[in-house]
Amino acid sequence: MTTAVTGRNPGSPMPSKITVPELRARKSSAGRGDKLAMVTAYDATFARMFDGAGVDAILVGDSLGMVIQGGTSTLPVTLDEIIYHCRAVARGTQHAHLIGDMPFMSYQTSSDAALVSAGRLMKEGGAESVKLEGGQEIADVIRRMVRMGIPVMAHVGLMPQRVHAMGGFKVQGRSDDGADAILEDAIAVADAGAYAVVVEGIPAPLAERITRAIDVPTIGIGAGVGCDGQILVSYDLLGLNDTMKPRFVKRFQEFFRLGAEATRAYIDEVRSGTFPGPEHSFGMPVENRNPVTDALSPRHVPATYGPTH
Ligand code: KIV
Image (cartoon, rainbow, N blue to C red):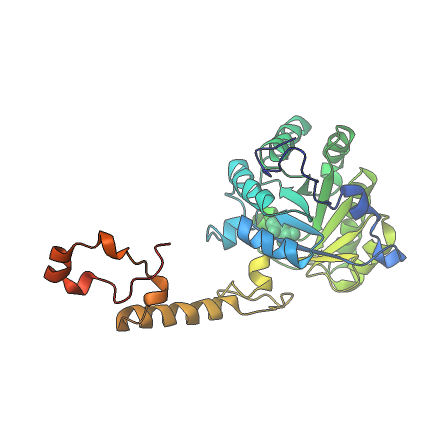
């Protein structure tokens, strides 16, 4: 069946998609498969790049409020905005599993609200599962969503939607009590049916403890190497985020610097008149040339008459 979101054609073979059961089964710490490699994406071109490179899953994260919209937190991001970016990412994704992030206050008020929001992410955005932040207090909401057939990835530890409650983007679970509470959160959301749990901004030994304690994969970000998989915000991974580099980020490229260098080269060539060259210009068939205007304004006539397209 053709879908508006993916544009697949009737009768064409469906590309093999990574499914929720496959992701849930990838408990690498228990010897069940390779570690999961996940990234965030917000548009079709980046999605095609990550998908082609072979990531397991792409998250349309509410981090877009910071890296795309330039805000200082994820709080203002709306459900409509996530859906918009999700649709674009869906068009660029053939193989990776596609997760839509549930933005602040799209699920906290009731399980009804959560179902409606998640439903919109899947129906309108093309998400194949959703992610939400929270621990024991959100477990009943997750349980109901999962019973209704909505696959949920949970997110515990440093929860960016609680930046004000936490007093900033700070590592969580450094005290014994704090660590125990995060462990209980992870157990509660896994028991409620989450198929994987993001563990963000916690000490590596706590992430290892959580990974041992639950039977679904843990996906770490700023949580050390002992998780079943990792996720990074793509703008951090590619070095597109020039304004900050948290300790847990490794830039695998320097796209911002490379982009600035390319732009400077473009400016130089425009100003010196070396771009566009004849190979970037369109010609006109000789029989269509107007000898009068050619003669009047010779500088508007391309030096060579190449192909017209
Ligand atoms: O919004 C986001 O990008 C996230 C990941 C960093 C896990 O939640």
